[in-house]
Image (tube, rainbow, N blue to C red; front, side, top):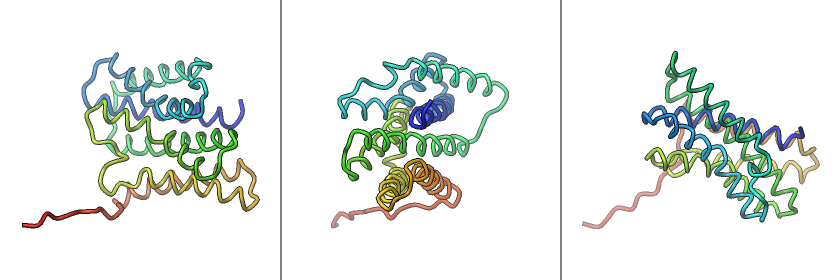
Length: 205
């Protein structure tokens, strides 16, 4: 298994965990949990592949679906004995965000796309599954919550990935550095409650 496939499998598993935790907090039944897990773990990569004119990755490799179902089932069993906090969901999401984003960047790069589009597709790959999860769970998506450092972390990491390679760093090293930046920014923002400035327009009386 090469690095892009390994990243997508790891991201798939981590996003499946985050989906089960989110669905469990909403009290969904087992079918609902599995639907949320599949949508979360495949959503971003599916949109990326459709934009690139590719067959969605999980259509041609059913190992992704198996990974989602096994991971989701194991997480459901774990939840019978332990109920994790919101912080655990956020950490799982941060790790999935980093893994999927750089996987998307590598695939866009392999298609010969310019650096700016690589960053855009990395952002779509990393964030869209989480958007679907939150919408289906009737939450405001993390990507759109005021001041949240979420999509910003992906943009920073994907930009670093492109920049480091332009400076001569090997692709794998650049990828690991970018993933560390994405996960690090997101986890520090969670731990320290760091947010971006928000735009507020006050109506005239």
